Image (tube, rainbow, N blue to C red):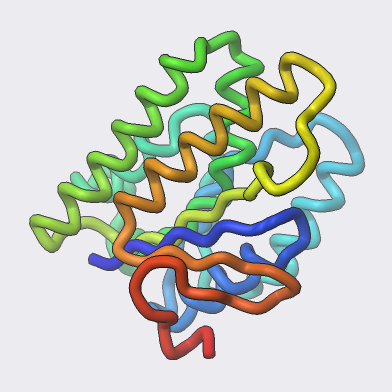
Length: 192
């Protein structure tokens, strides 16, 4: 079981590189989406992502509890490896954090969920079990300080979440302008 954390700015190419990595791992994959479609513009964005993925992908949407889906895969309650459960692309942590904050969870409760995900990833790596996993998140700490309290809260919580997950994954890749830079471990050959 390998895990790789992809982080970068908006439209940096991080999801495309995570997809390339997942496709190099197995012909059957699961796309675990945290996005909630609440308007036409977001529906159009989701449609573009679906089109870019093509065949060989199963999709599961889970805006609040992505770890539940991962546990279902691990315990065999979500189909088989042939259904795409042996490689998972979790896209994305930044939307998951936004969803949890919008649901009224405190910073501490959000980070507790992130830590539980990180602990699960670490445990699977130690045991050599569970699906290979690509985790995608946005880097929001490189810009200006947000003007609103909610914006600052989101930036701070996401920054902490990114640190927790980058530590847990075997590799971490920063993506800028569509180019990957290894932050932890080496770049996988499929990304060169």
